[in-house]
Length: 122
Length: 110
Image 1 (cartoon, each protein chain N blue to C red):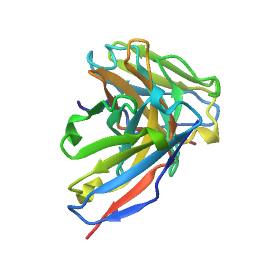
Image 2: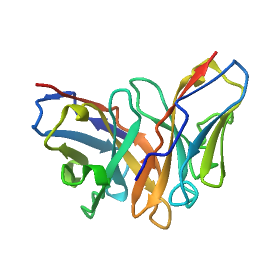
Image 3: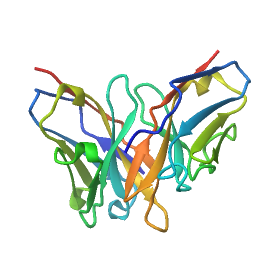
Image 4: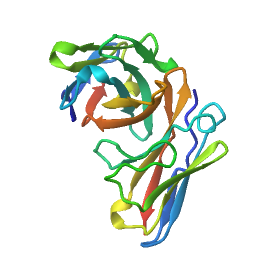
């Protein structure tokens, strides 16, 4: 069971970035994919999730309107797009598989992608 | 949703026991049995070490244990080893399909 992410990106302020996350070794449509970021000098920040089978999503309030999570089940790949990039969006973005309880509550995360460094600079 | 509160740093000597706290509210840590802990080394992805407050994945050393009292969760590391030096993050379900992390704690082994 693995998640492999796309390579580092360098973007200008105001631009958009799309990060991909390819899943392997498990049934892609059985689990949600979550995105977590770490900006320099700060901790982990949960951004949201999407369900590859239904397309349903849920975003942390901070990111609503600026983040879009999608997936392509044919190539078992999830995507995170962040628009209107700001310098404080620079950091490492991780995808991870979410495991739910029998009551469909988020339980724990794993495995994780290796992370994608996003640099925002003019 | 505000981040859960963790001490910025904790330290202990080789072989000692340390505890990291994670303080939330009745709407997250205190309201669900869904607190998890992650170990993270610089430049690496996080690794699950505790889930459902007290459970430990098979691959994780039994020197790591979790507990909770009220709206606070705790990660205890016993018999400190040099390889335990890392950042540790708590995480809690907050309802409505949402999740929140703590600010992270840097563990230093002296």
